[in-house]
Length: 263
Image (cartoon, rainbow, N blue to C red; front, side, top):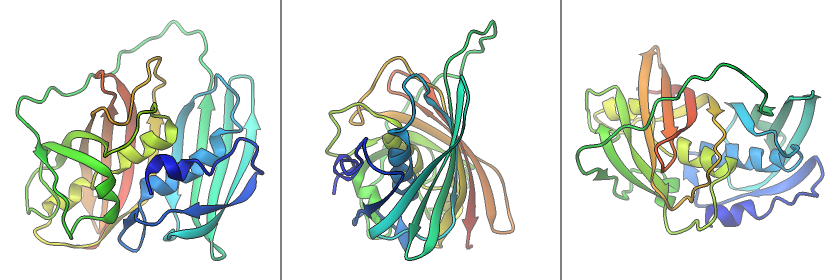
């Protein structure tokens, strides 16, 4: 099932607690792809957010594996002020909480301070396409990748960075919103996998994504730039910072992940 089709199940008039269908063919190990899980949560939440309050930050805890099939999603507005709204959303499956997210939305306000964001990297060589393989998670078949910097997963490399370009494969004439952006950013493998010389499990423990609202809209079939860096890794936990740029080169997302590595 394509990403756009999955998102069609979220109606603006839905109750705060409702049953959803977690899609098949979006697997990552023994669970659904984390970017899809987070997208399901945010798609349910964003329909009750007032216009003019874009998402500024979302923190996601992957509590338990979320699998294909039925699940319950709940949303709750924690506090709403004049400019800022704080909300919580969680997904439960088979009586177990699988995901919890805290989201902060904020309207623009007058300010004398303005600091420019860093622009997208300029790649000087053709990217290496990441081919489909039996070793790659199921969900990766929904994306096209071009690695411009760093090492492919399980290649035994030395680089602590990973970056390149990404787009949805075979879909998306519509503009990219928050759920789609969550999927695009999280679709990249953790940088840590490129340091491994063979397959080993790894999974996201927590993920925080900060968003920069954009005046222009872009399609998921356009190429989006991504660059990640391991800031520290030891004792089975790696801390990874990443940035994502829109097709016009403007910074659109800043990501931080704590990844558990079983190697």
